[in-house]
Length: 318
Image 1: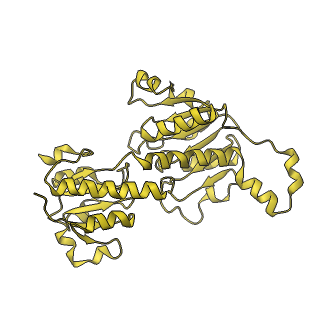
Image 2 (image 1 turned 180 degrees about the vertical axis):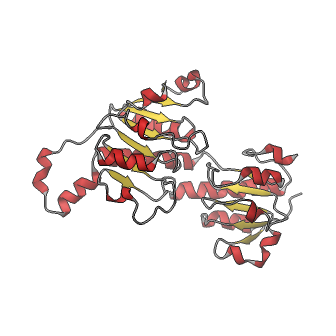
Image 3 (image 1 turned 135 degrees about the horizontal axis):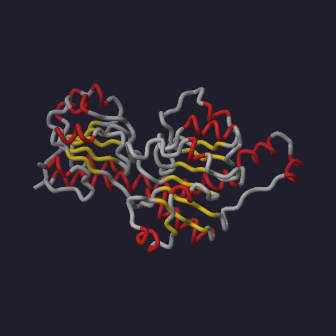
């Protein structure tokens, strides 16, 4: 039999998900949740990008589950949750994977087609400068994917089947045969860095932090572009700024930052060969609805005393 949970929604989610949760449970909304007197009775947290850890868990002695809206959980102190017997589950896949993949490809095309610069030519009455311009192609390009999970596989399909690109991937967590089975060539990281378009799709861990630094950027060719729609911190931003300033790479499309929001004087803001977006690659109507409903589904599983299929810390059950 399902129990009625007290659910604290820390970051806003799609209203359809809130409605689904509120139909069966008591909800503390994202507005003003920190000062809500009901916080001590919270049994389930819903989280998107806010950082949470032991200091918050201590205020919720009845907490039993954290449900992540999305896949990445680097903002959740999972060891602290596990110590308190709090399970953590995420909501990967579905429309969100497609949405992030489309966002990554959109940044690729914006860089290759120099969308910012072309817009400026028209607005600034520099129309005739078009005769000296040669834009880039995604069709037939050599695309390299760093990480080959759900989102990267969607990117591979779009770039390969849609644009006829030659797609390769680096993922040390997968066997080469698994990558080949998806129609993609497995490659070492050093070889991926030599390709025309490099797109990052790996979670942020201690092993991937600063995975792309000055040495890796130096291996890219002068017209190559780098896209990151995964997590800030995987690309060393200081090194990226220097590479873009020196024009040793062609450009970068960045949806995620080491610090979010980035400071107002961030040096990337001044660079014309960088296209930036505020961590919204997956924020489409369909993607947000799907994930919010998936969150509600996980909460229903928890309320029935069952184990979510996307449980990340089974040791908490012990």
